[in-house]
Each structure stands twice: as C-alpha cells, then as structure tokens.
Amino acid sequence: MPSLRTKSISTKVTDEEYALFEALAGGQTISEWARDVLLKATKPDSAEQTVLAEVLALRTILLNLHFAVSQGQTLTFLRPRRVLQ
Image (tube, rainbow, N blue to C red; front, side, top):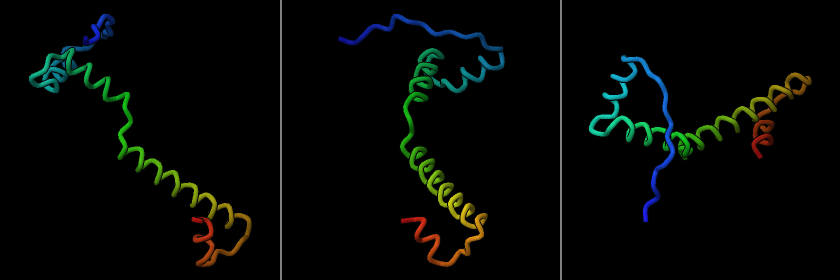
C-alpha cells in the first residue's frame, strides 16, 4: 500500500518566480514539480561526486608539491610520481 503524503512544505514567491516555476513544471502541477526537484536535490549525483573527488585529489597533490617547494626542496620528475603513489 502506498504511503500517504500527510506533511506539507510551503513558501511565498513573487509573481515572476511563480511564472518561472509554472514554465519549468511543464505538464506537471507546480507542487508535483517542486516535490520532484526537492527529492532530486537530496540525492547526490555520482558524476558530480566523481568530479569532486578528482578535484580534491588534484588539490592534495598540488598542496603537497607546493609545500615541498616552500621548504626549499628541489622538484624532480620523480617527485610528483612519489606524491601520486
């Protein structure tokens, strides 16, 4: 048996915002569209998570290399490879 929706979330919007939401909702009612948008926002996108992980990994590598340079260490071709491992 499907669960009943018994709770409500509401907000005030301007006429322009309402018109935008109507346009974005397309064939759906605004409440159905808003529910879908809110529920999708709670689920992380795997592609975004992957890109974020790669950016953070690159940031870590660059910070480690920057720290080595700031300590007066000479960077060689092998230094970035050691950081990666």
